[in-house]
Length: 55
Image 1 (cartoon, helix red, strand yellow):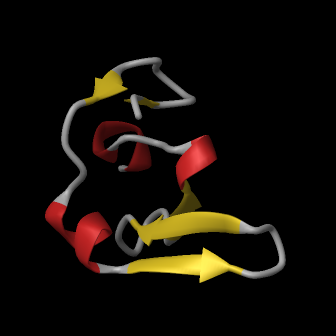
Image 2: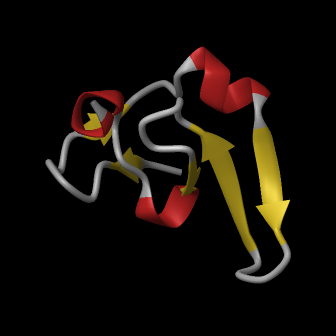
Image 3: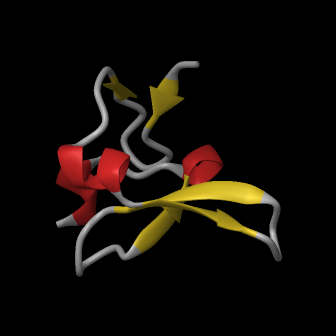
């Protein structure tokens, strides 16, 4: 699975450690989400935003 940032288009080769350690399944949307810090919160992996765009 290749992740691309939906804002800048950069390919994300590795997930940030905090994203990999804090993943949830959103039952309302049926999607996996990971925590990207206080500024972005939980992000759907289908609508992923990289750390640089999250700042």
